[in-house]
Amino acid sequence: MTLMDALFYWLQMKWVMDAFPDDEAAKETAGFFAQILSEDHEIVSFDIRSVDAGKVYVTYVQKDGTSREVWFDLEAVKQLNRDMFGVGLETEDAEEDDEGETV
Image (tube, rainbow, N blue to C red; front, side):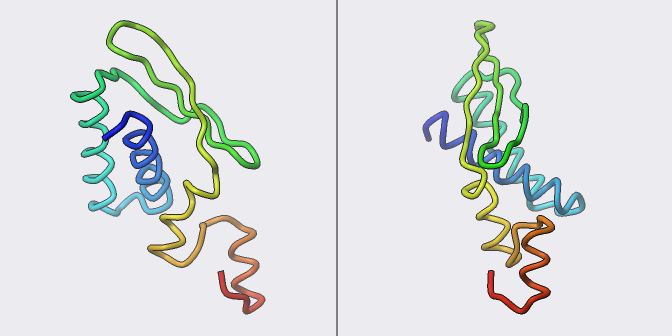
């Protein structure tokens, strides 16, 4: 698995965990991707730095101390929540649901 794939999958699961903190499967899956980042890619730390209208920025530090920042498309990150739960878990999505539109 590539570094970018592992970061993206971890990020999607973190998004689910933040929305559903009691979801043990999400915690375990995020842990699985964290383990891949650590063991396969020698990443010692990683986290979401910021979120703007269309991007999620993730910073990570490699074993040699090199720090990098990458971004992922916000809509792609939210897609797992839509697929699993039918919503993106943001206010605008809830408003669309209230109006009877299909998300």
